[in-house]
Length: 266
Image 1 (cartoon, rainbow, N blue to C red):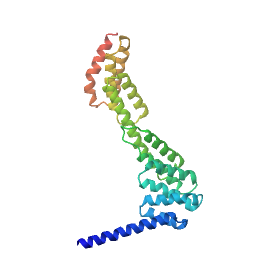
Image 2: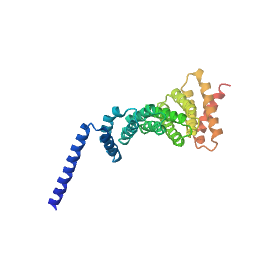
Image 3: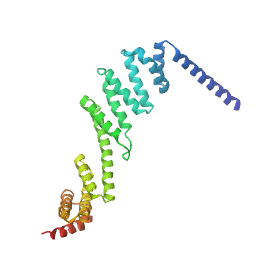
């Protein structure tokens, strides 16, 4: 049994060494046609690193030809399958710039944007790639408004905006918990402006009412009245939009106390 395993091991090692030797010969070969066929074969067998090395050697020789278009396309997808999305996006965009009239240009523009989407980090990290992904997806939608991929692109944009909204909401909460009520109120207002369809509106109004009240409590006398009024106004907005809200009972004392404070100004 051990001899058999050793024999199989030697056979596999021999095949690997032979394959490596053949590949090295191929790299040094001047037969571009054979190199191209081998590169496509490596690509189809998912050996993307070897495929890329050969495609890279062939780019100059086939630039501006039908095979050059294939090389550009396969190169982009090789990086994509290797999960190097930043480089893949670059090559997909370069394909579009080099072959804008070719049938695969639409696909490659979408894939360029999709790579940015895949590179978008979790909401707590820097969101530069998220903004870039939204911009690139919108470019695709504007360029190919009748494409079958538009619905999916719009869904991806919605996912990215949801991530940005969550990040902004957590920044608002951070200011509130730090008792920086002015910054919290401004941040909550911007969130409602930037995301008018947010599902967090009820929760935002709740925190805004609390923030206005606490802001008023800690304000100089000249500013208290205005801020108590805004606390009551925000409570009323919550009551009007969400009459069954569970936050109303929690805010009842806030609203009542704010009104009592305002009575002293009459």
